[in-house]
Image (cartoon, rainbow, N blue to C red):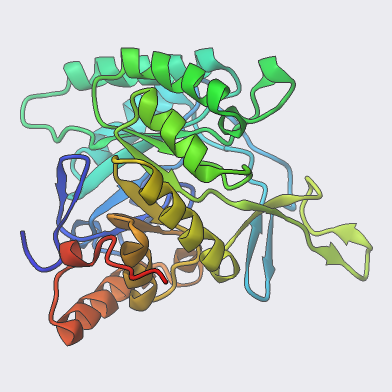
Length: 311
């Protein structure tokens, strides 16, 4: 591999900089602004069985150090994804992971089983999907709204049947709202996950002083951006030490040195999200900054992974 090349669960990525789920749509939205083929990969917006309009406005609020969002998994649904989004994604020039979400275990299974069928019947020469990323921060309506990723038993009970219907690469995107991320990482690994993505957003809230109302319709929202990076780095480090499967780092990445920090903590690659909203080409700039850092250090990306020296 080149100086920038890394491996993710047996998949060779050209570099460790990917676009994060929920921040790049289905890729096409950024294609005229950002050469997707220059990046390591992209993680699509969540796909659910049925179309979802998402939450009402206001559902985004910028703060001094990050972004609150309560989009509500808005997406066109599985059928529209298969017909309108997937053919283009197969030709976009980079590795594609499909983020899958749902409110019941059956929702997840329906999407993953259909993706398995679509992979089996893809046209000759069409690029295969790199894998699925399960969003386990969704509320499990059959368990009173507790997220699938909140307890190891519930997580395993979701990952195991998904593993049975999906033969491709399977990543599990963990929630940071747990007492022991290592325990959740081990549960996902034991249930058949090929890798982990972390962290998802953290609950946050901002209030408009003029109206005295919360700035998003759901009152509390998912918080992302540079303020959560130290939390994300810590959880990546804890998860990477707990399991043998690879970890994808997410949370507040704004520059090339942030990429280096996540890799040192044990991530094999990263997802850039919130930074893309302000500057759609930012992921490419971050990649270039990271490459310059590698050159200054006289090393390559693969050698940096997990090379932190803890006290």
